[in-house]
Length: 234
Image (cartoon, one colour):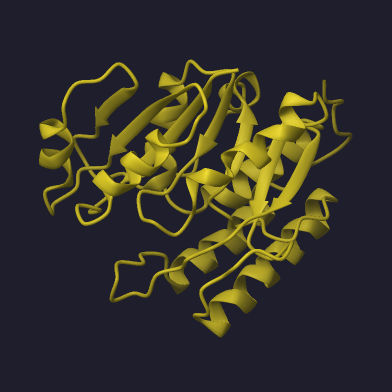
């Protein structure tokens, strides 16, 4: 089973090379698709300077369009059996791909979320209000999707490729998270969740999501909420 790792990157020159090395170190057949979203800090130049290798696909936006837009570009280029989202920073650990893959390999799941709030994995202690906001958005999303997720806003979302390539995604920024969650619920996908570790970063270290993105997430939960009868998953 081949894994496509889609990495949206914007101004991640300090971490992108190490992140690619960590992804490569995972003993799974994979391709690495990095989408540079018109970085201004030299991330694009660093990517172009990396040696050509068959496992690395580099794509570049001519304008800064947002994480959701970069993900759409990456999803469109994916050729693996399974697709996983990987942020370009070092908050999430690629060594945890295997346990996320297992429900899909076993034929039980179409989509797997890696939850920062489930299980006993280690976490860096950071912002109380961010944690509270994430839990509130997850609760509201669950109320409309009828899923019982613990972490809707997680980066680590893994999909069978035909599932994610078959969803019509619209959001260009962080509204991607509630949008894709609502749409996989509307499609009747079999969703699993596994606990993951998390090494969050501060705003001084480059964290980008802000309160405006939280407001947009609220709007997206309402806008994309499933309507009518959900279809059956495979």
